[in-house]
Amino acid sequence: MTESLFNLAGKTALITGSTRGIGAALAEGLARSGADIVINGTTDAGVADAVARLAASAPDVTVSGRAFDITDDVAVEAAIAAIESEQGPIDILVNNAGIQHRVPMVDLDVADWERVVAVNLTAPFLVGRAVARRMLTRGAGKIINICSIQTELARPSIAPYTATKGGLRNLTRAMTAEWAKHGLQINGIAPGYIRTEMTQALIDDPAFNSWVVGRTPAERWGEVQDLIGPAVWLASDASAYVNGQVVFVDGGMSVVV
Image 1 (spheres, helix red, strand yellow):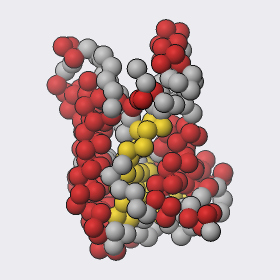
Image 2 (cartoon, rainbow, N blue to C red):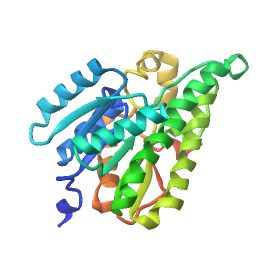
Image 3 (cartoon, one colour):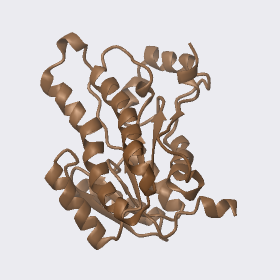
Image 4 (cartoon, rainbow, N blue to C red):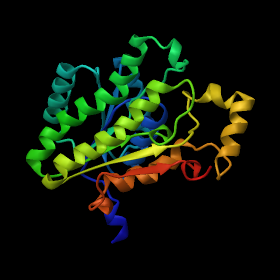
């Protein structure tokens, strides 16, 4: 009975920004729980490579891919329509794609601010809305927004990222307020400091690495695999009455001073 609650067989999951890093790990985790997977990225070549890797490691599910610009409303709508026509209804959406830009606020170009906002906040709205329009007619669906420890906390030099991840928490709540009554569950996962290609430079910085380890009660960086269990839970029937929540997976960093 318990295993069946977490079984995603027969479901189709679209994960944005899933050619590498956290997105790729979540795609693999959902696939291992039985979901068919749609990989998304910015280039056809990158998507094709990610599809081939996941198909080789998860041969029992269907893995497909589609490159599209998640910040372009027209491109998003066309891509979602094509996925649903070719791969079937999207049962699970993971809004994972995100970018970082590190510079002091007083030196921050407006164009860089707008670029981060477009990817980290506008895109989850656009993709979420396009997918939800179809989920609403079916009366069911799961949306998981990948937030961040910066949803709750701030650090110097990453103002656009912090603002967008805080906004994504409230977008999750807004989606819940409008769509939960129609059978959708919309929740977020807020990773702490996770070891990825994007954070490797920070890991290699002795001072920053020491700060992360010392600041985190678990005394380590998170691994992408640490996020798979929460994602499977939120994508599955096991979380049927969980809505509008952001689950922090951060080794305890957000609860200590």
